[in-house]
Amino acid sequence: MNPWQPNSPCRPSCAEDRARPTVTLPTLLSRAARCAVVLLRGWSVFTRARFFSTTNRQRLARRWSCLLLAALGVRLDVRGWLPADRGPVGVLHVANHISWIDNLALVATFPLPAVAKREVAAWLMIGRFARGLGTIFIDRDRLRSLPADVARVSEVLRSGSGVLVTPEGTTWCGAGMGRFRPAMFQAAIDAGAAVRPLAIRYHTEDGGPTSAAAFVGSDSLIRSLRRVIATRGLVVEVHCLPALPARTSTDRRALALLAEYSIADVVEASAPSVTRHPIRARTRSAATVPSVPV
View 1 (cartoon, rainbow, N blue to C red):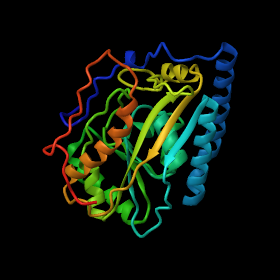
View 2: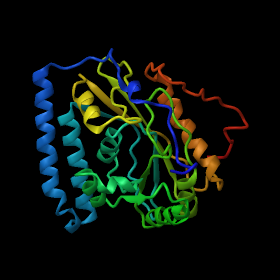
View 3: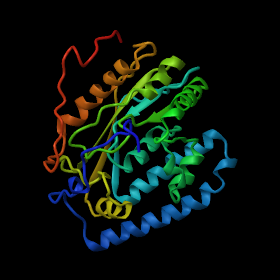
View 4: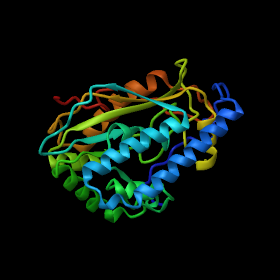
């Protein structure tokens, strides 16, 4: 643990949305069985993923993510413009972070290498899945390795591949957002890459916001999984916001703030009601939000 490591005020109690619609026991058991089947099939395929081409790995990752979302009973709703992003330099895709479901939704939309904490590599099934996608694992406890991690991300961007990053560095329940850490934005500046903000939020089919998908604090994956498959009509929205063109700013902090506030406009406009922990108000002023040409 170090002072740089992000900390969220969210706790497992934030995710206990008792007002959410729930499914019947037979539906819950059916979803659990389908999830097990998709996970087992994925395990058998991902053991051979390193022998596939990059294109085939991405196609496989997108299909598997869509299948698992469907098995969980979660509908993916992608909004906004989805450009091809083909060019000599990749695009840094940055998103807010609420749940492990975020990763499935993002890979189903943008099957790209992601930046993840080192511990993910050791997770059963998910670690193999992440390695197969070319995930860049970083050690958050070693500040000395951060410049090298940024250089690795910059190198991937220069190769023409996009990269997925969650700059908050930890999960929040959706009622608020953390500040975006600027380190990985330096990779975009160094590579001359554009930055695409992606806003993620959750609601039920009736349109009501929910925190049921949140995976925060000391919550366990099993408890979170049970809460998700027990929720009826859970929808994850991925809003593809206008990209910040390359050379928008040479200040990584300014670039991080621009991305953060564009995402906050979407996320906090219809945040779930969570009052179990203090959410710091996000205020705007000329002093905090830089004005730079886009």
